[in-house]
Every structure is written in structure tokens, then in C-alpha cells.
Image 1 (spheres, rainbow, N blue to C red):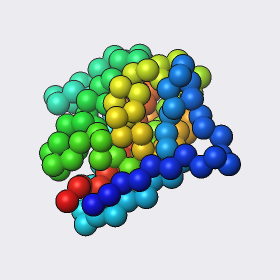
Image 2: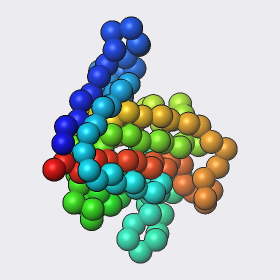
Image 3: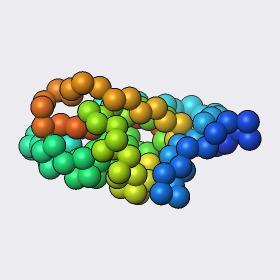
Length: 135
């Protein structure tokens, strides 16, 4: 199984604070896909971590993604696509370093969307993901 990440010369490469935020194109070949439902900033007991604190929540969501992938035998390096929902996109981009600590490992193709609200008013970020298991 191979994963090729492409940054086409004819497309703008989005970077914040020196961190490239995503790959424009990910070409993957393999047998097993892993789909991870939107992860929120909840600990294993369901408690919200860092209510309304974007930085703390990005970190918790990153840990949740890591744990979800590990349960399927995958790692953050196996990510090929993420979709991020945030309630304040300006605040989200102030914490690119935290996101990069998790998603920069795999630099997946990525979409970020600002939404009015998530499933609880104290939640400010949710990330769903897709990975491919390496043979």
C-alpha cells in the first residue's frame, strides 16, 4: 500500500506560522479504509475538556483521533482526509501549532468549515477523518 501526497505547483499552499496545513491531493492505494466519526473534545467519561477553549479542545480532539485510529490498527500517519468543523475559524487558526502536532504527521487532505454550533454549546471543534491501513 502506498500513500502519495501532492502539492501541485499550480495551487496555493496554505501555511500558517510556517506550518503547511494540508495536502491538496492524497493518492492512496490499499485494501482497508478507516473512517473515524467526528471527534469532539470529550474524555473517555464523556466530560467536555476545556469548555469553549479552542486550544485545549484541538488537543483533546487530536488525542481522540489518535486513540480511534489506534483501535483500528492505524496511526495519525495513515490519515488521508480530515474535515474540521469549528465555531470560530479565526480562533481556530490561532492554534495551528496544536493541530499540526497531530495532523501534520500525516498532512492529510483537509477541509475546515465554520459552523454556527456543534452538539453542545461548550464545544468549539470537531474533526472527522479517513485513513488507509498500510499493508
